[in-house]
Length: 306
Image (cartoon, rainbow, N blue to C red; front, side):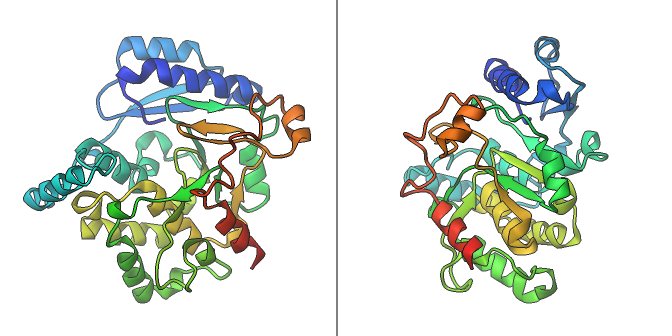
């Protein structure tokens, strides 16, 4: 979990729910990361809520802060324009730091070097259903690399040049594009344009070795070289989603339909009432985001059918 000291209460809520719904059965370790040292109060309260091992890590400055080579005048002008256009987080440098870190650095942290599988958890989220099996073992046994619960459209104004940058990379490195990939999820015209669909990355169950692979590493380095995390507001959700969709086969990406989850303002609940009862879900299908007009699950379904 990437979290600040000031988010203790909302982080405890998320952790306690996942411990109750899942981790008390398995005792997997938690890792908390922050760009400043965690306070003693944070560590004491959080450690008391966790059934297994817990570690607290400091993020390296070059993994978090805006690189010195970024033209700050150009970046500031972009932020000001986004603020004028009322783009969410348009004026925030710290949000951009977070997006860049999650896109290309979290899996490089020293505390995670011997870790293969991860479940990304954020403060102030909800887990509605029991997970009585091991999703990491499921992913391992079924050769999956990435799992999601919610998919939706990105704000176009945050990524005006991202897709052109992706196409440049793919044209120069076609060997990295996986056969049987998920381009159909990303584009309805064979990749000429981006439909803005992405997996909502505040929930991820994934294989860090995929992010450490040559394909994704070179992809991230290319994106980084363009400065779009700061000159625009490239998010880790579209970056991760495009990487997974292009460099993994579609059968290696899994929709965790049975995990009830909410990150405000959107929720996913298992649609089958029998699953809801079997997993003691506290959600219902009413208000489910899955086939909301802003959801991309229809595109994912079409991708899996082709």
